[in-house]
Length: 316
Length: 194
Image (tube, rainbow over the protein chains, first blue to last red):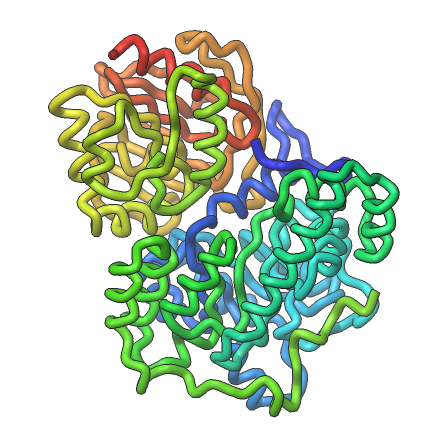
């Protein structure tokens, strides 16, 4: 049984005894990705490499996050033509990113029939104050978060899946590690309050988190987020992936780390291998051996960044 | 539970609930572990990921050996059904990876379409004592053809969505996301074969 929202929202579509767009079906989709790697791609060829390497899904972008950094200007959703071509050439699910708060860009992606929409800080936010109300979509959404409060606010807007924000396009895994540890620590805190049976303290915690008491209580009871939670942002090597899995992440998003490296297919296979078998040290070593550090994406120091993508969105 | 990829934890939870105190359920990753279990669940996920990654550990060959030598009961869910089938082709992309061929059925992947066409529906399987459960059909496959030795456990409209052949059960939907009834039916199968 998977956790369902404490308050039922949304507009499921019923027809001939079947119902689409329910939280069970939208969240359930994310559950099927668990233990897997979602890879950022910009072309059909990259999507096919990702599928061959064992990715559970591909995420279509116009530019990889590191190129978004270099290009500057405004980053928007990918061309529908490219998205459609990729959907016709791989059997795994295809996701695409829309700008934070851009209701129509999301609608376009839903109409193009992508399997999941990432309302993403990698693109230039269209509305810094308001994220998309995601409950009413049949298509599930994933959102980024740096903290428990941010994650719960996104879930309360209808996100069916959460990922850490990390710092995309840097090849630097430090921020993703910080974010998942922050979420874990905050869940332990509300878990302890809940175990004490101190309802007053729990409702104070929910006000601080900016989320409803019911959702905070459910999270405290579960001891984890009520939706699937992946790591994302700066993952470049098999060891990066294995470490994040060991911190309790349900799976991995890899952005620039693969197709900005010079050994894309081998690296894609290696990251999948390390994610699948992260408990097995010998397999992780074998995966790490498949890549050459001299081919890795040149990393960026977070302190020297001109643009911190993780700070975009979540003004609330 | 084959632990390679997918909703492993959800199947472990459903199996534990179904077994009560009369057995244990845990993820397995290796051929050696496959050799020690009484029965196996291959959970939902991506068959293109689970298949090749499992085979690295010789797991699929071990499953085949156990089924052929001592009729180990196997429950294949969604991607698990795809892996057990004789053949699988994608609705859009066409023929895919090799499958185990432990069920004499031909499967169509993503048979209802993409995620926007995923749905929940009531499914009944009288042969397993299941009057009605919520089936989550997520980018679900269906069974296009089943040989005469295969019994059809459930249909949705004209589409076959659950089958049984000897000790093997294959379902196109996810029974573990909303309950444990099918796992209870599978547990009865295990007890009957023990």
